[in-house]
Image (cartoon, rainbow, N blue to C red; front, side):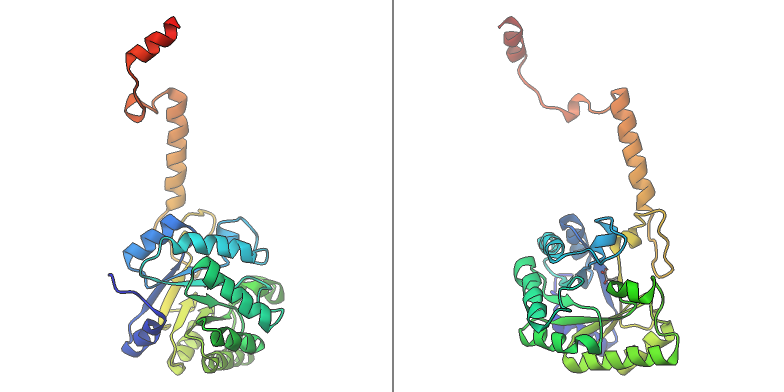
Length: 279
Ligand code: KIV
């Protein structure tokens, strides 16, 4: 899998009915594994705040946090398409800030596109970023930066009014020129309806099987947090318990003098030690 996945590959995949796989990454080794494994796109999400930095939500994530993690991930990517999240308040304060901050993620961080949350209310910002030559991925449905408006992590689009707003916002973003839209925690029939109506691919998270692609937080797929079992995620492994086992074993081996052995150590001529003793 050596062919580069580019912004135009998104539309090509949609036209051919081929599914797009996307995973999040926040560090170099993870990025390298994802890239070499053949995932189509990698997202440095502002979920870095919750899954890496230990915040309660994504609100505290800053531009500096995003640039720091995007830089690390970009070093591990040769082939996949790299998208970086614009964090809370980096695009709500005006067109200038939106373009400036999107530009920083691309220029300083090294991602190829940016993702921002919201529909009609940020459409002018989206257009300005695209006009500056930066591809934009939309994000509708449950948008974590608005957690305090939603009153928690809740599926969006269960009523006709909200479903219609999400659908209309998707059309508005498509018209504005976004290359793809993430739909988060939207009922699967609504997500399937929107995916069918749009020409650009819809990437789902917690939005069912009828989207054009899927995105998952890598920590959730790996099962790193044993206490976090959201409905939308699938644990492909229990990395958390493996991690725990390794750490416990290491502590025990250090305690008992089992690790390290001389195989893990460096040597010196006996003469050096003898001279030290007689010095
Ligand atoms: O921040 C993130 O990881 C995201 C995905 C959940 C889509 O926005």
